[in-house]
Image (cartoon, rainbow, N blue to C red; front, side, top):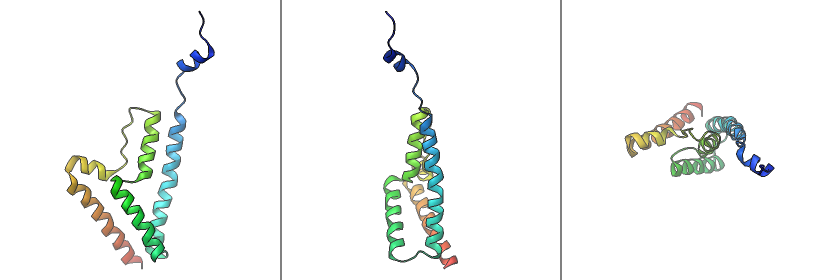
Length: 122
C-alpha cells in the first residue's frame, strides 16, 4: 500500500531554522535596550521611574540567575539544534562551577560598576 500525503509530511524533517532567526532577532533587540537603559539611567533618566525599572530588572535577573532574554534566545536555538548548549548567563556558569559565592560576586561587581558609571557621568 502507498504512503499518503500525511505520512510523507511526517517523514520530512521540520523546518526549525526560523527559531534561529527569532533568537537572532531577540539578541539584536536585547542589546540596544540594555545599552540604552544603562546610558539613559547614568545620564538623564533618573528618578522614581528609572529606579523602579532597574529594581524590577535586577529582581528578575537575580530570581532567574541571568537575563530572561538570553534564556529565551538559548531556548529558541535549542529548538533548531537539540545539541546546542544554552549559555545564557555567565552568573549561572560561575554558580554551577564555583558555588553561590561566585554568582553573588558577579552581581556585586555589576552593581558597583553601574554605581561607578553613574557617579562618573552624573
